[in-house]
Image 1: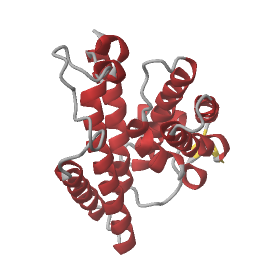
Image 2 (image 1 turned 180 degrees about the vertical axis):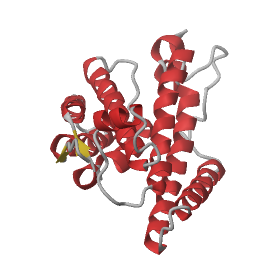
Image 3 (image 1 turned 30 degrees about the vertical axis):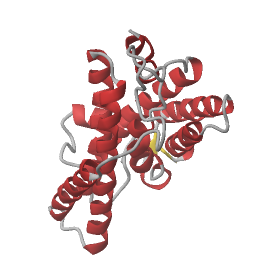
Length: 245
């Protein structure tokens, strides 16, 4: 019942089972990983997928290396997030909503592998209007712009909830690390920002800072602050939206 109420913390509350036996060894690492097979396997699959997608665009050596590296990082993060989800998600609603956000984040390195690096990524509203009108549907930039806008909105909601009501909430680091790496930091030079992106970016930065101020020595709070800054600052101060792009 504590897990249903409190999530991961409640599920592992206390040191002793009802039989008064320790729930875990009282010596050695608190949490140990017995195998790296899952993260390394996911990295291998992610690398192969992104290399295959990039090859279809006629990419050269450096772009292939970048695509493969992005796929490897994406695979590792996806595997680690899946492990976290098995422990943290408690209901069909959490699995569907947070699982959808995780899936969209995983699509970022795959979609970037299809992009030739030409032009700028449009704002989410511009991309939506073009896709809705059936224009430029084959251009990866339109999908990237839409993905970026959706993930910024999701991260803004998560950051606001974590700042206003942190009790029983985990830091969603694995959920938003890929968006911060592939939709956040590059946004200063390759993406246009509309009003929506700027508003979401400001909310992410402010909420992540507020959450960190409550416990500045907590490593997870520091990591969440850095993730929020990497995702939110480019959306606030990146290039302006260009409706004719």
